Length: 508
Image 1 (cartoon, rainbow, N blue to C red):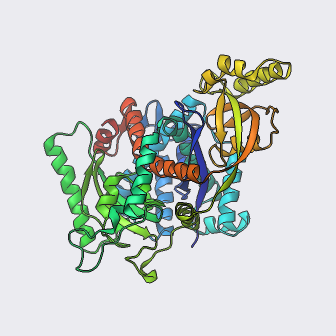
Image 2 (cartoon, rainbow, N blue to C red):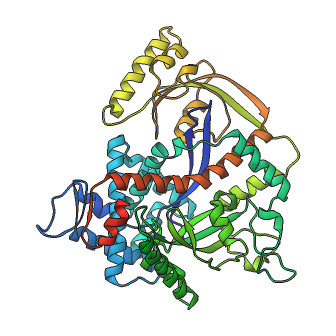
Image 3 (tube, rainbow, N blue to C red):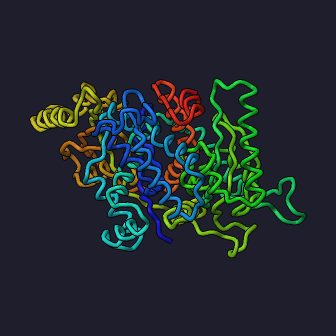
């Protein structure tokens, strides 16, 4: 299977606590093309005087740009073997995505976050490697699908940018308490590793337990979301409910789930057929897990209501479980399967797990509209020279660091592999105790890092807790990002000239 996705290890600073929380995620990089034409909007004037599709704050999205995106969306759907809706419906869906991506680009500019060519080249190289092909072969596959190489690269740049903004604005605000981790680990002991303890639910055939997922086994879901604005009246809520019921009726009558999602879903994944990806089962919200409990691969849930609207879920992938034969399994992406196997092995093993840990301090200077990359880097270079001249790193961290670890002299405690973002970890690993790094760029800003000491410890219990935090984090990050994006939309001026309902959704 040809996979256009990037696997990255994401990490966030646990601001109230020592150290860093980590989560490893899969980000799908489909050639949606939205970044290309919408990105051109920031560089070129409106092509037609009256050809305005939407206005996002002060940025215009033209009908010409929308038509270019429409062509790319058709190519994308064809590549995924998803039947495209009629042009008017697809055009409205594409414009909603363009509005969302423009909002994210504006937030990125406010935060002074960007994706340089080196980062983009590395992402392309990673995708080619995962598909066991050269970059030239990857390019040929992309262009064979009807998408230009530049269009694909711009689309990938947009996805990386969205990821970086999410890390900065959402990930860093999600805190998983020790109590939540304790409760999660206790639940694994009580249930024997299966959600609900493997007990049958109502409606399951006699003598047969429903399909349930081990918390550490992969579960893939797709969704159709009919979004309900917060300000919707009871009669409007019923109208949205009927839309969801109509969508479910079409699927039950034999319509393809992905095609219906592409036509009617308000979710950000609509033009991917509603595909939300694959993650360890317990990484999904409880509401979703309850809705798909008892469902096998390719089965569809009833309508469920969340704070965001009405959802219809489809199980796209389930890891092997005692209720399903090997023939019933749809294999997950290899990186997700590997991760789930790693987690399960650690939870079940009895021996020690020896890990080399590093105790480090850092000084963080964040970038924003007032502090450019160059200014932040120069400030840290000056601080570095002061440390080399004999000043105490901890004292300077207390005075200048913009991280929550500043009162502790920048002390991050003992860090295990994978607990920090890759640029930070790589720079830290290259230091000997007592050495100080050059300024290091991460999604959170610029850092100076110094290593205090290293040790090798049995980290089995700590590893379990770290993986539990990852699962709990994944459960929260999607809804948290939706909430953040909703606030950004509510604060923005959005004039969607093709879809009055889109204005209502945008303004919540």
